[in-house]
Length: 61
Image 1 (cartoon, helix red, strand yellow):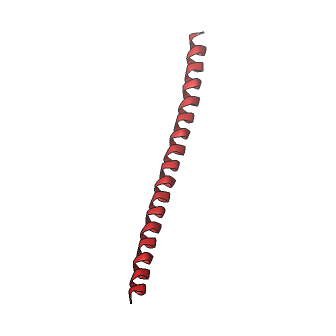
Image 2 (tube, rainbow, N blue to C red; image 1 turned 45 degrees about the vertical axis):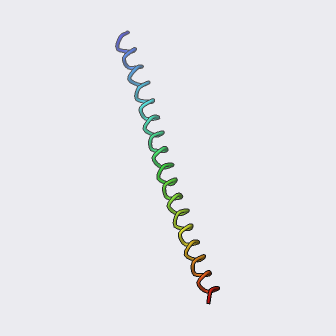
Image 3 (tube, helix red, strand yellow; image 1 turned 180 degrees about the vertical axis):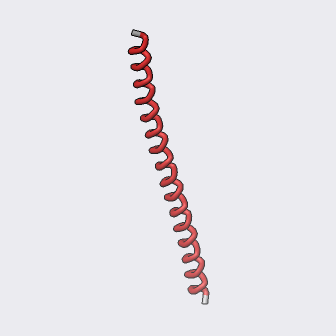
């Protein structure tokens, strides 16, 4: 009786630990891609600013 209860508890914990691990991996992936997207947007903004500066230099001449 006690053995079957402890086995059920161990199975429940195992399933939930695997699920928690999978959620953690998913969260880490989302954070990683969010950081990459933020970096790409930042780089694009820098490039746009450089183009604006170059265009203003051309139009001043």
